[in-house]
Amino acid sequence: MSNTATKTKAASTSGGGNIKSKSSSNNSNSNPKKNPKPKPKKQPPNTQKPTAPPKLAIDPPLECTKSDFEALLGDAANLSNIDEASTELLDCARYGEVDACRAILDVWSSCKKEEDNDNDNSNKEDNDTISIVNSKDASQSTSLHKSCANGHTSTVQLLLSRGAIHEANDSGNTPLHWAAGSGHAKCVKLLLDHYDALWFSSSSSSSSSGSSKKMMSGKEVEEEEGSGNKKQNNNNPSASRIDVLTKNNFGRSALTEGFASGDTKTVEHLLNHDSAEEEKLIGGLDKKEVGEEEAGEVATGNDSSSNKGAEKKNEKKNGIIHEFDFLRGNDDVESEDDERPSVLIRELPIAHADDPFGQAPIEDTTGLGIWCASLVMSRWLASPSMVQKMQNKSILELGAGCGIPALTAAVHGTPKSVIITDLNPDTMDNVRYNIDLNNKKWCGSDDDETTKATTTTASSIDWGDESTYPSNKKLDYVICSDCIYQKDIVPLLKKVVTGLLDPNHGSFLYVAPEGGRDGLPEFIAAMKSEGFDCVYEEVAPDVYRENPLKSGDEEDCFLHFHELASTVYVLYEFQRR
Image 1: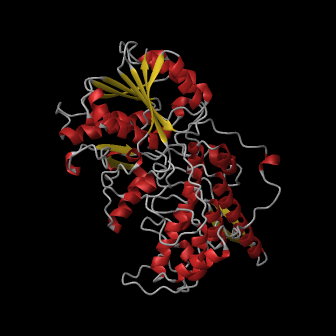
Image 2 (image 1 turned 180 degrees about the vertical axis):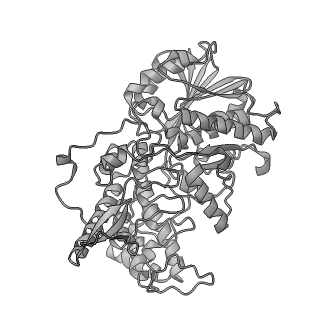
Image 3 (image 1 turned 90 degrees about the vertical axis):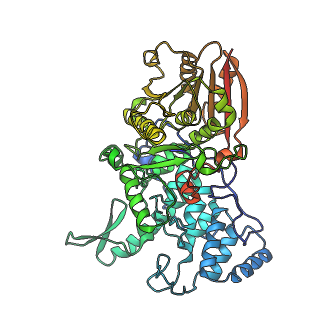
């Protein structure tokens, strides 16, 4: 799916609230995505575990002066109620305002919450004292989620020290999912060490009372000595052992997200954790069966709690259908929202989520998800200038995954033909589903030949096997999004691009993050020096990184594509000489 710029990973680009630290950490690094790197080997048992036991997090030192902090305490005290303080804490955590967060926690941690009319007790402990550190937004994301997503290490440390609980939001993502997916290795290590230390401490204290604690599926299980009876301990979520294999609603674990980030240190921390046991990694990871008849409804941003609950259940089992408006926010396009074409894309849970890349290219299931570079490419292809250039042209997408860019070209323009390619059979089935989905949207009938997507077909291509290339076709455009992840793939991608393009005037369009890709500089250099001219190389406009969902739901965009706004992408066009 996705990441998912040196804006922070926020649903909006506004500031972090009224309380601002005079000196704050802003570690919002870009987030590599779709990085099908071979799974690193686990270290031998004698070197895998650190010799020192994990330690609980403690408050980080002040980053501002004492006088500035006194001013922050005053600002925090002036907040009108616990709800305003909770909202302020969420915003400040998102933007890494560690001392502002500290001030809010110092002032408001022991406050009582008045009874709400709707009896919402989501942030309420049994003793009626609010744990403000665990306050949640509308999507049930906490301050710990937001600081982890953006790599604000000091803020994460502070929140852990003040009792932050590690739990999932509405989409099943935990803070560890977001830290791992963004490649924030220090945050990942903090989370794993802190909650391990918390769990060990809890286990030690309980062992003296004649009971021992074990872990099953990431939950704390208490076994009474001599009886063999087990019961889950759900009363203390913070004492439950953290599990790197716990899956979100799309079938992705934190380990899967770590692999996708491409950050070696992040993957190392996750693989070295006790919960990444070999038997759990290799066995028991049954592929999810996804019924097309039961596919999730198109995301509409409906806030109805009953509808949301049904949608989330469908997402976990059957994936979700997103509706994208790739001209949304583009000032160069003068049209009403309902007049602009939209693209429907089904995103599925990644099969074999804890080993999504497999042992061979055909086993790679990462294309079942949406990766953010493909959203940027789609924005580019939907722009009026590109639509005009591709009129009556032949287009092929490599490593297409869900097929968003190619379908965008078909829906927004009038190309002669569009071919969407990948290799994994499940990914290709989903591509065909998405083609049919857009055919039905634009014509309303399978028999109507006037649809904008009727020129679109799906085809399996093995880059290393020329016999799988389309026969007797030299294409006007080949497009690809973020497919370079290691140096040895450079000659392979160069080969397939050269073999597919018209030698006289063919163009290759490529979108990738600005950095963090092993082999990307070598690929760009090879394309510029051997048979191609680089006719366009620009950083993607800011609007290409804005929310592309037709609903305009910022929370949904943040939940599904949280790395989009925080990553700098570069657009390339190479033409055959």
